Image 1 (cartoon, rainbow, N blue to C red):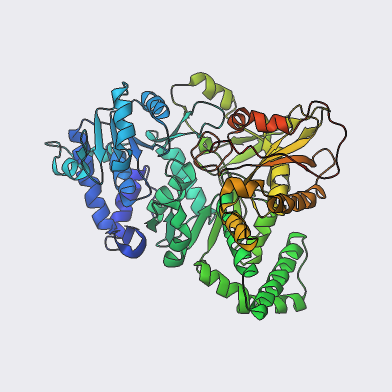
Image 2 (image 1 turned 60 degrees about the vertical axis):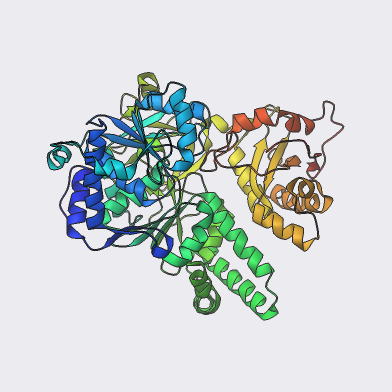
Length: 609
């Protein structure tokens, strides 16, 4: 393939070389768009947006679920020399107004479901002049069909896209705002092309014509990179899944070659498998699964210890794979999977080993929006559990004196939009991006300790990583969906625990307990089960890290809420503020002593979700 300088050139080359291959589809094939049809739609949408006044250097907002129109409109905007950017669909009107003021977009393309919040933002004085709706034409909007039917007169599509330059803005990706106002990360065509090509060289993305799912938000840089930009380079077939809850069904139908998941995806997959095996009424099949899992885990742990499994273990593993593991992968739709990747946060070692035991070699990736998504990943033949791998091609890593991970290379962002001071704080004079993550590097492999700002110091002055405590508890407690460690300036570690919905439902059914989350969270049987898991976790933690109290939350936390980002990252400050009373209840003013296990906190049944 040639070396096209922009994604406009990439798209035109790919569409010309693969006119009849499917580029975009939805589950079941209800919508199926070939590369030739994709190219035709890009041309007509670009001409229609030009009629609305979109010009080179402008920005256009997208507020869409994962659907083919995202790719069509995003790519059309690129061909105008403008920069599309995606908005999390859960954003409140105040955040939308802030983003639009920062981006200065006059056009937003959306679904009918999101029109009310956009009209409210418009009424409150945002910069929006045109709201384009892809699936209807409610009051105050223009339909995408009408936009396509009304091209700008004498618009020269080919001359316009050919004028786009490598250092032009490709997109703005707004950070999730775990600690405050989102920052607009500006990524260029050139830098993101380097990232896309590095992904291909690292064999982490789809190969030519392979199948990939798009189900994570397109406002998240990793989904944009793998399911949009790399897919464009590789002429991959993208299946868009509008509702993330449908991803497991999508796996079975599509049988993708590449699948990227955040840690919660892998946790839910593991929990589902474990619950299904435990519920198996055929004793022989249940015992066969347990045997296969044990053989698979022995092989994984031998390899992780740097040992070569002996011939007997290899023979047993081949049989376990034939009888149990391979059929299970096929049942899950993962039998044709070539690349499994996990990112956005570290996956726990136990969950990672569980996936590898199944024959799903999950490669952790590390990166951030500011590094065009990915900066490190495991080599395919050297997956080291507990690390995030080695640097990407063309990426350098180093450690600052305090252990902060630094990244340098062409993948680093152009800067934060309209925030020169914050850009200078993030990227030093030598071009190093300061990630904010504390890390270690051994034999070239990077391991993330925790976010620098999240490290906690207890009342005795002991430095601790909350992520380490949380992942240890998460692995020991199948009922725990989310765990938040509290200890900063406190005498001991306590936890807020959010139940896993699937595991909680099974537990309630097995023990004839109420399914209502508040009643279940307060029940002594569930508290006993949680205590047992925490006792196991405490046996693996240092004395200072051991959990002495916990509260099971009487509600589920929703992505995109004030306590969770859309990609399931905990907004720690918001959690501490919102649940200050529950946290305080775990720290009596005059403790009479320290118990050996975790003491249970009374659940506040009045807490709101």
